[in-house]
Length: 165
Image 1: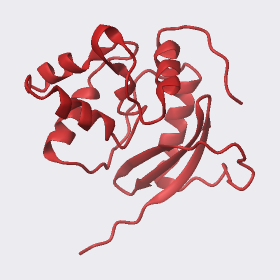
Image 2: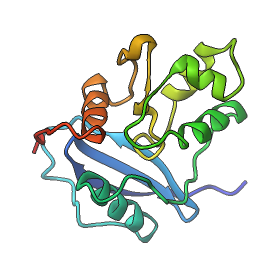
Image 3: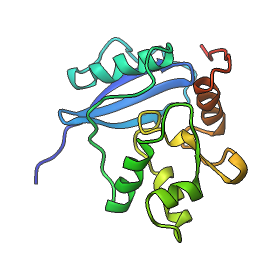
């Protein structure tokens, strides 16, 4: 069995520090870090496989990019991957409800399964699970916290925001 080697980089974003993980095949994870002291993390060390991710995230957070074009290397069940691929189709600044997403994946009886797959998205922001909302567009469930989800939705809709840093 071949062991996959993950490279790491860190990206300072308006919604906090992000840990990026990837392989030679593509981006595999984005993890929200909640640490307040970043002095021991070197933001300048970026492995080759994550250079384009850092570039595109920078473009996104500076308003120059609305769509990501990165190779992705995520793992999940067949159903989770199906849901994540459909989430990739949600356009910038648009939202869909969990029930609408379950219709899109043709699994009307499994809103909970769709919500579970959405919550296990290993690459938030790039796979824009923040664009999936609850009934009546209520903000529910986000791995980075509801405040980040709200920030991202407001950012994409053009609402002026301040950064955390």
